[in-house]
Image 1 (cartoon, helix red, strand yellow):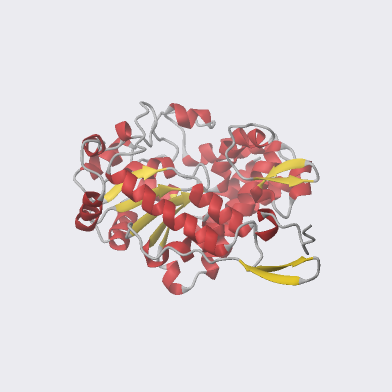
Image 2 (tube, rainbow, N blue to C red):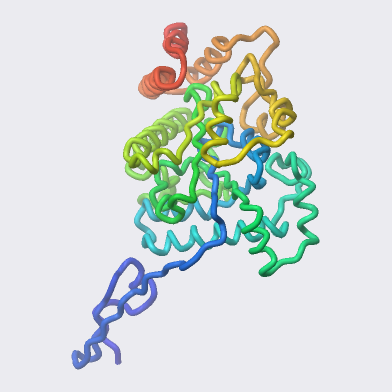
Length: 383
């Protein structure tokens, strides 16, 4: 009968380089975990459009597709899961890197033959909403196999992935993709984000449609981004949770950007939502340089459809998906300061004073870093 030094199942091996098993004390066996490694790749250029929910990634997807060679945006959570599980030390680095590399190549291959295309009528990320949707219909009738690899080599597509707030834990992503990776990081004034996050945070309690990695904390479940402050998360009301979540992600993202070496930092373009929707030209020029491409003629039409440029930053397209997350069209006589004050008041009526201090700090820091000062401070003083 086996008497192992540990329980000899696969769970006992995960995360261990080697283990020793003994058979009645007579024999010793060494089990060494193999290193997984992908020797080649298909996708040469990958664009990740990242940022907190509510920062404008949905808006940016079709715009990015108006650059030559940039493919339709894909929303695939495996890249987020791999980075998050590695951050939580629940998966080995080589395994996380392999998963990302493999799925990136699968996504590139499938995109080039129209496989796994989204034809939902109302989805803003779908083929029917894309400015170049016709080419994805045509790909359904093109050959697969090695002919696809030849077409990829000839056309040099840029795979576009929409991700959700992973820059703060994206070390594994950089390890997997190296110089092939370009990251577009969307940011926005936290005071504008609070109402969006407040509309969703209650779903983390027990909603099976939340496809977010959850943690078991003393028998209660919390989202992975509450790691390290689980008790505070559980003790907070929903508005406080929304504010603390935005603060946590903001600090993680800022720290990640500060830690990136110069070469890796040059692969990341941070775009403040407020500046882009008023004057997109400087950022589109930077994207041209980063991606080594040029805009198609469809760019101006797509920008116009997205109501860019616009005078009021909140005056975007009136879409059901936006209304679902508490957005409403601004009134005709509204101003930027009015919009900001409305959101500040909405938060102040529901948050504790402690959380409002955090929100005021975040708002002031954001404006100092990306925008003109004083707006958040005046909103705070008027409340």
